[in-house]
Image (cartoon, rainbow, N blue to C red; front, side):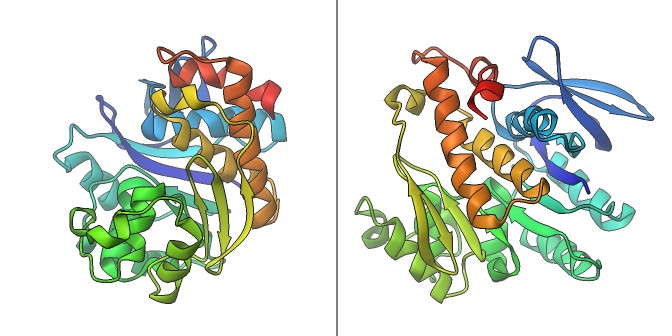
Length: 284
């Protein structure tokens, strides 16, 4: 079965269901449907996630991803186009869905989640970035199978009183290396997905609020300056899940592969995510 990637990109992109593949030069994501073709830049965000998935699809011999993207300059209109499409046009039968960069609109999130609850068999529901915020703000985070928070996002999930990331309380944000504790707190208050891959200097695999694995090597400090490595991590993980790997194994392997990709690329702070993705086949 296939996987659906939903989100927005910061450039012109019509809202339609497409098949995605990486361009020959590796710097663009080509989106094709019966209505035409669109190329979007693989810089970061949902396009980088989809590019990583598309490369892994070739390696794993699974179908390339279905994507539903729209251009959004930050005002939220592209996000609303995707919400409306999913709610009104329906969803294809897929193994899983990841919702990525969205304007966090709780009303639209709840309408869409109600629609998703009617699907049988229900796909794996994954969220990252803005859609993960909407899931927590709605009170329905526990309806999801997988989140991909970084340390700051995990703090928001762990703060049961914060209605928005801006209002995460200082005592939760003030200390480092608290991922296991914060993940447990988020799970206790039903503000976490069943599983989480917490991104950081150490990547933590969390299942039912408890750490089941962690990955800290290879450690490539130069990657801190390269935007999009968290997006590629999510794309790799979703491809492995689509290929049928169990959740814990898929997340642990994704963390390792993403780090190997960075190590093989030997990046400088001037590197971009497209230059790293060229090493993904070797890393996998």
